[in-house]
Length: 102
Image (cartoon, rainbow, N blue to C red):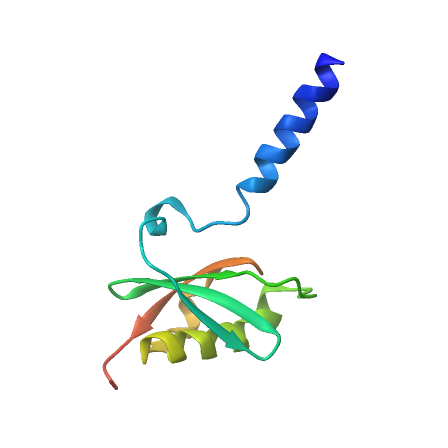
């Protein structure tokens, strides 16, 4: 019984870590932005942005979500994502922004 309880606890702990921002962005207020079927929490620190996708949506690859994530960055910050700077995966991603056009 103890092993089953410990396994369940570790699984729950692992899953709970997937629904929040990374430690660097934890205390940064989020702006919620919806682009098509995607809902993002957008957090900005200087010229760096983190996006947490909060909806349940089929996104087979990281590349498939970047167009909507890019639009969310523009809507939330007014700045342009730097295309070569995307990092992360379909749910939690970071990107550098260029605000020189703003």
